[in-house]
Image 1 (cartoon, rainbow, N blue to C red):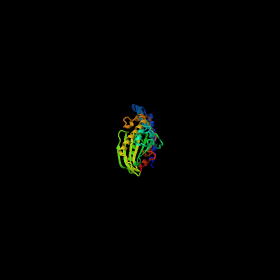
Image 2: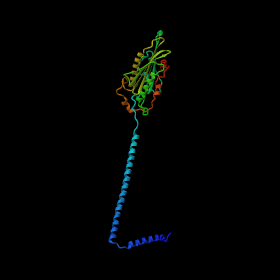
Image 3: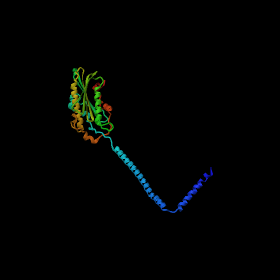
Image 4: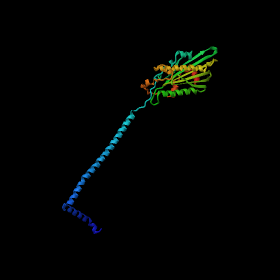
Length: 323
């Protein structure tokens, strides 16, 4: 390293010291005084600019914080509304069913089962407020001319509304359709015919067919009616035994429709609704019952179907429903 390079730091220090001494001892001329005053005047300006920047920064932060807080409040409000909302379902119109063996009057029983008015046998049920059935058997012995056999069964099934499964009306409608389908697809049935039934309930269908058994030729009538959240199924069949003439399908059908209308009216009167069940109801009792919506579980359509049928053993029951 050269000698000149080695002396540079010392020379710079000496120059700075000299300049410092000169600045201290130099006289204050008007020109120098003007420069000093101008320099001092810039200090407040810089301070004001710094203060303004600091104020703006705080304002932005405050605005952002306020926006975040408002968003949180909105989210909290929305969450509260979601939590408070709960699903609802229309209350079931009918809260009970009649005793099944009282669904038909004595007069009607004398017409349909003349020798079996007092033979009513109630089917088993683990909940008589939602399901029940009753069957009657009649055998008119005409001696050498043969005998006339009749079998009658009425089953009642009530559905309760449930927020998970749906309203009682919807569940009853699904079961009603299943009952009609089952009646139309009995194994071995011949001459199957279906037709709607007017003037009773909300939906009603009559299904008829012939069934040949070893005991004789049976004619079956099944009428299914839905009234609000209740389904009424009436089975009625007849046969001429030991050479007796088989009853006509028309006479059996007419008797079955008359009987089912009576049973439906009984459902309505049991729930304090008079005879509204004998025709398509214009004023649903659901409005008066809506304050007592039920959330208890209900039988499924497939389970209820088997439960609603009579457990009584009747020769015609096995003859008309199963091969």
